[in-house]
Amino acid sequence: MGWTHVVLLAGCLGVAYVATVHRAALQPVEWILQHAAGQEIEDMWAYVAPDGETITFSRTVDRGRTYELLVTDRRGKTPRPFLSAPPAGNLPRGAWSRPHARLAFCASRPDGGNDVYVTDASGRDVQRVPIQDVPGMTYPSWMPDGRSFVGVYYGSSGGRLGTSRLYRGHVATGKSEALTSPAEFLVGMPTVSPDGELIAFAGQRNQGKGYDQTTNQIWVMSIGRQPREISAGQGRQPDWSPDGRWLAFTSNRGGSQGRHAVFIVQPSGENLMQLTDYPWNPQHPVWSPDGKWILFTVRGGVDKGSGLARITVPELPR
Image (cartoon, rainbow, N blue to C red; front, side, top):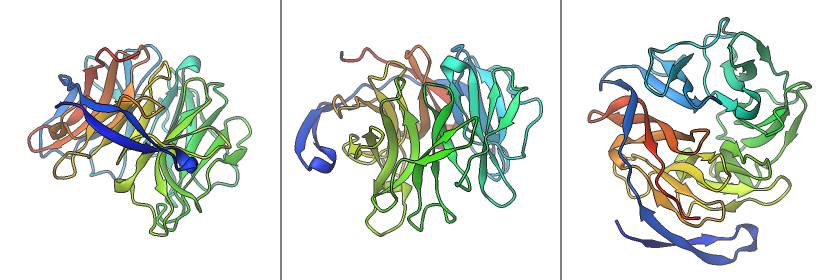
């Protein structure tokens, strides 16, 4: 695949500019954990721990009704439970604060909401974050201070009523601060840049139609500023590279049957690159701590099965 010009809009300024062209640099996929097609096992929300070897992830064996928080390594060591005393029976969406070796994860409540918990690298010291004024947050992404995180609240009906918004939650006090307005944007998964200056998120302008994650784009914002769209089209599940120079995300642009591929782009919207092919249908890509490889869930269907896999990051423009 050659180069394809793409046009971006510079946020609220409405100024069009042409980003560096889109290039395909497809990488070989290496399995870490593989399940044959037809099994009900699905491994999701994998994240590479600070040591660069350990991988935490959530596994379901009942079609997504409940998830167990497990741990393996980059060679696919037999998974085991990560927590010594799980606080709930459904534990999705974990993310590491690598400088502080702390994992934030969600625990589903009987009323359908989520609580956020944090734990240390041993999985033994588990503490609930007493978030105030928000019934439930999900997709926590740490601020670099290790004392707060950014998450999303979807509202009582999964955001379909136009209530999804980003919040910053403080671990010690539970204080919460709204970062986006649902009157302007309906938001999904966020990710905080390594320096804490920028937040990228999957989302869309509120046009009165309700939240639809299949039409999300990738946006970047400074706290207190208007977001700007950088993905030049559909995009979900962003994650910052460790040096803050790139964002990985998934997109179904150019695919068939709704399948996605892994793309990367610079926060300016330049150098958009496709790194995987569509049959793998990768989900939730995350960078390794050294920035040399990207981990993701495979949801490839009958031809690829499912599980966890990784690709090596090619040499990137400076």
